[in-house]
Image 1 (cartoon, rainbow, N blue to C red):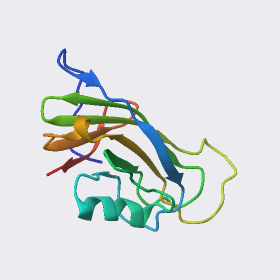
Image 2 (cartoon, helix red, strand yellow; image 1 turned 60 degrees about the vertical axis):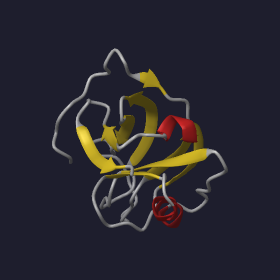
Image 3 (cartoon, rainbow, N blue to C red; image 1 turned 30 degrees about the vertical axis):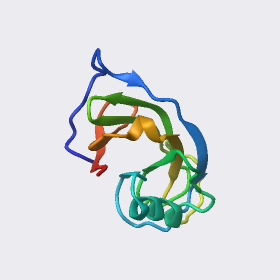
Image 4 (cartoon, one colour; image 1 turned 90 degrees about the vertical axis):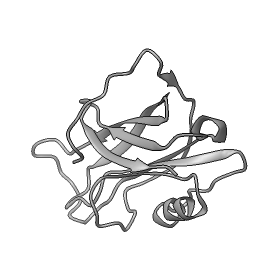
Length: 144
């Protein structure tokens, strides 16, 4: 997990509309939780390499939330909200975990969810922060 900090929406935060692009349980990534905002060719390529079916279109920026490697099936990540506050993008997601005693596949998984936002909503953002459903910080990244 990130620094464990929490952020409440500030009065100046505004909601950012997003469009579903792709989701997968298999990114092939064995690292921990991550957030990637596709503002550059390199960051867009990182998202599209990790998530089959994730493509970007003109005037749109991809935003990918990655849960990290898990030891079984039953895990998921779903972006639920994006806000713009000053030079930050605040990305909120629900991280699903299998319930106690749940029947799950015995295979390594690495869930991800990718959405797109209008390029104008990402313009000038210097940082993006990913929070889970409890408000805990999961990942933080530079967007420039």
